[in-house]
Image (cartoon, rainbow, N blue to C red; front, side, top):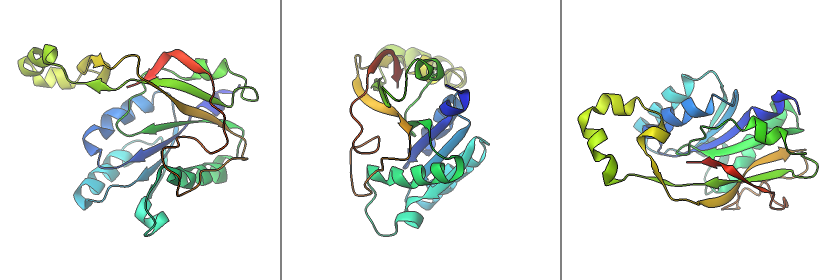
Amino acid sequence: VPDAFHDLLATLVRDEDDVLGDMMRCAVQWFDRILVLDGTDDEARHRRTSDILSSFPEVVYVARDADVLGDRPTRDGARQILLDEARRRYGTEQWIGVLHADEFMDQDPRPMLAAHNPLLDPTIRIRLVHAFLHTDDEASWRSDPDAYMSLSIRDRVSHVMWPGVPETRFFFDRGLRDYPLAHHSKTVPISFRAGPLVDGFSVV
């Protein structure tokens, strides 16, 4: 599978400007075409979000949900806005990764995707392991805050809720399936069956 199939990421952002820069520094290691839907309501936070996104040339498209959805309630199906734009720009027949702006992918997904035949496995599940702060780390936070903040997210927040929750976060888009805009709790377009769970690859 050509590398070009592995570099397209769809991201939803809402009031996450405090961690967005960290998330993006992880994501741009593996994705160089990132499309974003921003649902931030507060204008100051929206401006900070816009400033962060504009500092990454890998971000090729940003839409604000109020501008593209109007008064319609925002649901997970709003990813269709990003999928339509990805198809308009780049066509189909490619893997697409899905992340929220408070999730960190610090492993290269390309070897994993290259190992899967998209005609047999058009979706891939990975483990979403929620990170949490722990009192064991307090000494590190207090002793040298600047050094602590310079660490990667995995080094900073070292405790996760293993084994996590399996979620589908990659799908191969052939242009045949869409998201219903009003649908919620759906990370990939409808009618995809659950793909294989790849243990050893997780998102924090």
